[in-house]
Image (cartoon, rainbow, N blue to C red; front, side):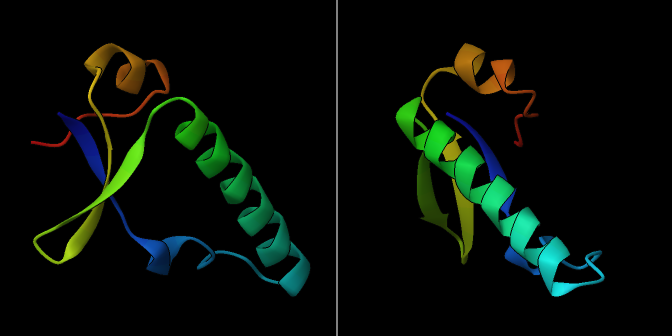
Length: 68
């Protein structure tokens, strides 16, 4: 199954203002909704969260790199 680790601590680390942070969160939320609508899922694995998809080709079509 294709997957990558989701690490929230870096999501807004480079944002200098609250407006920048809000925009980043909004963009991220839109992407998460699109991923969910396309069959992606989140899975707890060894203390981390992985974004997964059962179809490697769909996973790769989003530009993601499969972690092993």
